[in-house]
Length: 461
Image (tube, rainbow, N blue to C red; front, side, top):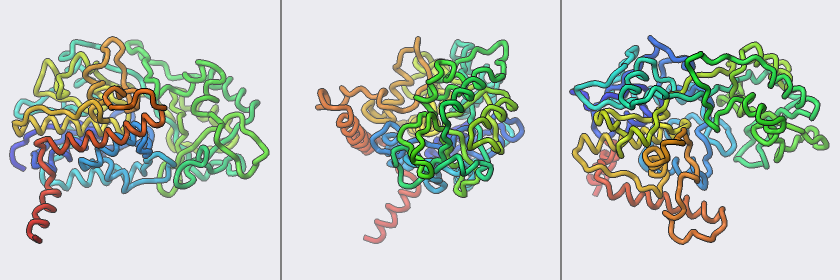
């Protein structure tokens, strides 16, 4: 490969999406990955886009924040969404994937691309000098690189905590105490395995959950949990009924085997792979010690004989305060040749990380091509996410996923006074129109595959 035009450090969802976007437009990309020589607390392989927590890329509903973001990313040709759709497993309204097949497909796409070089076993702790550097190292950024970022962003407070949910072998789940159903019957097919509990079982479960021994954070680290990823025991500690109104809510679920019984609480399990040999405990992120997880979670009747393929764990998530440190193109104010993408910027979730990688790739391409900086407007999903990263209140900045709260309805004409559903439908429709209009006006080149199609079409005329 000829001279590298951009170095990308990290091959998670953001780095993979950015690399593919740029390579497809003729940019020479070098991806640097410290795995497998140095592993993180959560990764188990050197594959690109390895999913270490949930296997869900969120809702497919077009009238939702994630649905709006997917529509825009698909319009541009997202690698992550292409591979997600090809490795999809049943997940109701959510886009869920077989994590192994998904990672294999992303890795194969990148490693076979003529404009991409991938170097494994390289821990990078500072930017390169011969070309711009994109750090897409995710929530588990190494200590060395974290120190460099801290030195450039004038902060030593670059983390919050996230937690991983357990995975259970399907054959060990008791069919007598579980049933298949989607909440309110939504979804194209039955996807979730539901584990009901009566009031007595629930109360005993809460007692043990609150008393369970937890992993103690290191003395130099402060516990800061993102609202959407709180450990199950942290939710329970906010009130004994909190789980019944959160991840264990029983509403909208009818047990076809025992229609006369009304569950007091329900634990939902989501398939982890196409063959449904493994299930993820939905919403059961935890920092309980391993032994305690087995003991307490087996109090759920359907899981009394559960075999855990993976237990929950906690890990440090690294992110910067975007409004303080970013220029409009997500490069650092103190180091304009250095860009950040993914969860390290303050987006939360697989889908948002990939979307952020796509955004940064657009800006890097503009720089390399000498095109004036041009960002999606804030009345688009990508633009609203970017607006949050750069313009939100720095004093109260915390990671966010994509949701309607990021959009200002004033950006959309004629929405005042309408009901919420009508407003959201209009916003979803209009945001994609706005994005397509912006995209068609940019000077960003088409992909190599699109160019080939155009040439074929021209020859046929």
